[in-house]
Length: 453
Image: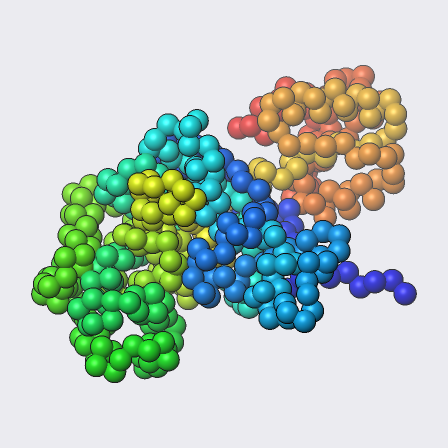
């Protein structure tokens, strides 16, 4: 019995029509990256498990896809001692699929530090994998499009990356809100409520406020050992109203006794002021205290981007990670980066019907095959069309006319060229418009002019 074909949940096949749209989005993003001075690199799909573990927090570690060791992967396991899953994992798996592009980038920087000119600005467009529960906009295999710069603590890079987001989403005609926060401010909050050692637990919970609501966030903090008194002190902060400037005034008052908290407030203020002076084309910049992003490596600014008018969650995010390379032995190497969520951006652009016409990327001309001599003649004409940048092809076999025309219809090819003895003698091609059924006789040169008009 033949096996029923299938793919793992959370993964997808992409048709040519879908790939052209994905390539369009990636093209817009890559062009913006290069305009801002970022250069491409690539890293392996696999990393050593030790490279990835412990970099994303407890929740992130659970979502890393581990790869079983090749050969007898159980040979290092003692069944009497290593039955605990954590102990066993280290014995049966030494590699993992990358969870994101940022940690591999940090590893790349450390390994290549002697060849890199700092500040180093790179972009990377590659797939990542997460053992997450598949749902709308959330996949187990998906592309990230990252831009990072390491080697400078300057807040000008925060401003630049906000402009980069604005440039991309303006080109895609996608209205967005860029949310900004700072982990120093969050550290200050944990400090003033007397729970400085619970920073990660508090930020992970706060990050879920929009998803699960205030009461569930409080319950989660209680389960992590955050006191009721501390949680009560968070209420006025989490319920803050007003624009960014008003919220920052409130935060200065709340964090008056926290040096690191006030430092975070001033960094946010500086970025907002500089962006206000420069202006954004279409994006809206907002200070959002609940933006926490539960990744352990963020140390300063945090970004998240949402599309207006669509229920999709974030379509981009990032932040400053001033000590990320330190985990690989390279100290004092500040960095900051952002990521574009290609798959979610695709869904949003599709839902809002913002894709431009991509018909020119498909085959525009099909040459019908009437036989060997006619095919040889068509190949010469094809060469000229292709040199002129016109997507064209010759049907491979001298099949029945109906079969070749059905092929053209199924692929949506707008023009079919027929070349028989009369056309070879006259040098004029018979061109059929598949949309309206009309035919005309034109030279190769005129056909090129017509299609490139």
